[in-house]
Length: 273
Image (cartoon, rainbow, N blue to C red; front, top):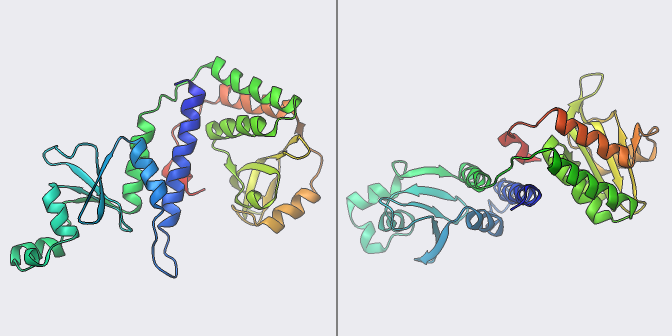
């Protein structure tokens, strides 16, 4: 795959991991893991599936000695043990529970569990990303820039938004969470602080109005939170100062920043966005 294709894949992997991690947050009715997102990660990481005792089990090699087996349920445990042992510990038959030795194994699985919940998700995320070649050269970045510039000129919002999203991935710019509730806007920035040292979002703040076809960059930030609410962001947009850069010049700025300051590896924390 080309660099752009690998980068698109990386963005999709991050989205699936964020969905899975978000679904692990406690709710009123308990944890309900996003099984579709986890299945996507498992498939991308090369796991095969099988159903035993009404459980969805995944492994990259069920015949390994011992295999690594993930049980797709709300706890999402990752075992390093045999398949029969997983079945015994996770969903034992009554006759199996009558054995004192088995009962001890059922009640305590710390000897064979290597990860659980969010730790399992992050292991899957790492394995998915490791398969991608994310090395790039100047021509790769120039290609994304040209795609974005042409899309802006031709007023093709989807293509322009994709170019911005690809550049944002390389620069660790985040999509403003509230932007999804402001129809027609793609807003990018970073968690930062304002002049008073309070949480803020921006520096820079990149605003793409897909309906109007306008793209602008502000050097300042929206104060009050790393995740500004829709009302706060809406008020800011309606009263913002003049853009520092507009149109193609915004893409030029992002391209230059990438080429002059190659990004490092992202931290796990970046998946919480």
